Each structure stands twice: as C-alpha cells, then as structure tokens.
Image 1 (cartoon, rainbow, N blue to C red):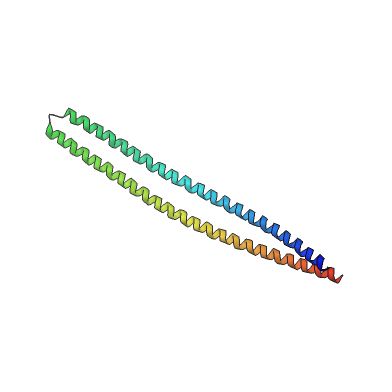
Image 2: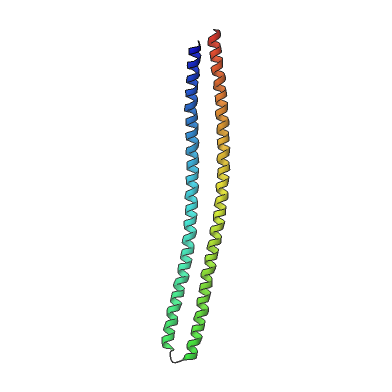
Length: 164
C-alpha cells in the first residue's frame, strides 16, 4: 500500500511539473510577444520622429546653402558698388542667423520630443511590468489552487485505496 501511495504521489508530482512547465511557457510566450510588439512600436515611433526632423533640417540646410550661393553671386555682380554689397551681406547674415536659429529651434524641439517620448515609453514599460507582475501572481495562485486540488484528490484516492 505504501508503494502504491508513493507511486501515486510520484505521478501527481510529474503531472504537476508538466502543468507548471506548460503554464510557464505560455506565460513567457505571451510576455515575449507583448514586449516585442512594444519594442517594434517604439522603434517605429523613434524612426518616424528622427526622419521628420532630419527632413526638416535637410530642407533648412538646402535653403541656407541656396541663400549662400545667391549671396556669393551678388557679391561678384556688385563688386563695384561697395555699399550695396555691404547691405546684401548684412541681409544674408540676418537670413543665415535666422536659419541657424531655426536649426537650433528644430534641434531643441527634437531633443524635447525625444525626452517626452522616452518618458512616455518608460511609463508604458512600467505599466507593462505591473501588468506582467499581476499575470505572474494570478498564475502562481492558479498553480497553487491546482496543486492543492490535486493533493486533496491524491490523498482521498490514497485513503480510499487504504480503506477499501
């Protein structure tokens, strides 16, 4: 009878191990899928934001380069008229300063948006972490309840086999 009782306990433990492995694998798979999707979404957002600001900076730099070329052409044409040439240089410098200021403003906005996005992503990751902890707690509770039920069934079965 004791050998049978021990065999029943061994089978129950083996079944518990298999169930625990199954529960754990499914939970990890779900968590990995969620994290992978989260990473892809964040990566796409970063790429989009970087691309938008790169295009804007590139456009401003092209305009700046065009303005610089025009300024050089004016310098050659108006070589004899010093005062007019000086005015054109002053205007070009103002425009260049504005372009440089625009680039600085775009850079500051880009950094600010990246910081905000990082904070948002951190917050989202913290939320995902809390959700994962809740899922793990529910899984532990489920495993404990299943284990208790199986132990009760094994004890009943063993007692019945001992009594009858």
